[in-house]
Image 1 (tube, rainbow, N blue to C red):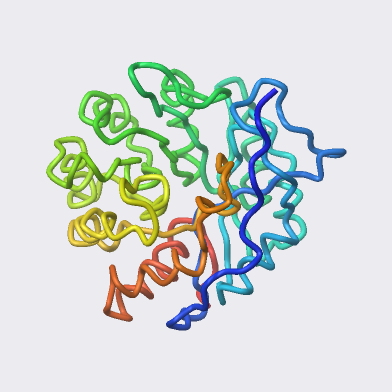
Image 2 (cartoon, one colour):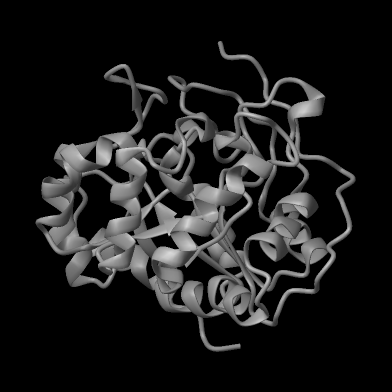
Length: 298
């Protein structure tokens, strides 16, 4: 039995700059209700219930119009709770799900019709060992990538950037769009000159990958207000702002001490520091996610 995670904060910082119409939180999760959608027995953490209604409330209080839900590892490859959220809010939500190589073409097509635009693969390791249980790995990616590409989906890759150079040949070979989670989960203590991080910047610059400038709270070595993450976000934006989206990672799983739970208002306010130019913020918050996830123009 894993330790219960804390809920997201009920009080957050005020948003300093209103976001443009159509702005999107491009990385979040929903959980429950557990009587309908139980967690996987074999899991790395136990989050509290935070269903689609609470996620919509989270979007509304930040002034965001849209959101992208990602099936969390605690659900395994059970996407039912995410699909229920898509049915409840079809205009506001899209999804990235977890599927395995044995899924049928009919099932993939059904998922696409419901608003799924990508599949997530968990290649995140420390010391050669998977950090989270229930991940779908490289073998499934290789088998699925041509089928994802044929449907216009992308592959969302949860990976440590230092592992990218070694795995890039296998990831790039199928020609499917790649989206690297959380800035390559770079610990800020490694610095922006880390070869893996520079490789991620190169992939963006060459139009071979996207990334999410999310996970400031995961990547920081200093803690809130995450000043040490600014050089990483800036480097990725300078590499290719056309290939960057942003998300909160709400409801912030794997936090067990109240002072550590991230403040979503603060996370959104970081964007005015990372992107003082309103046109760039509109690109990252509105235009890029609309293109990547198939939202209508606002």
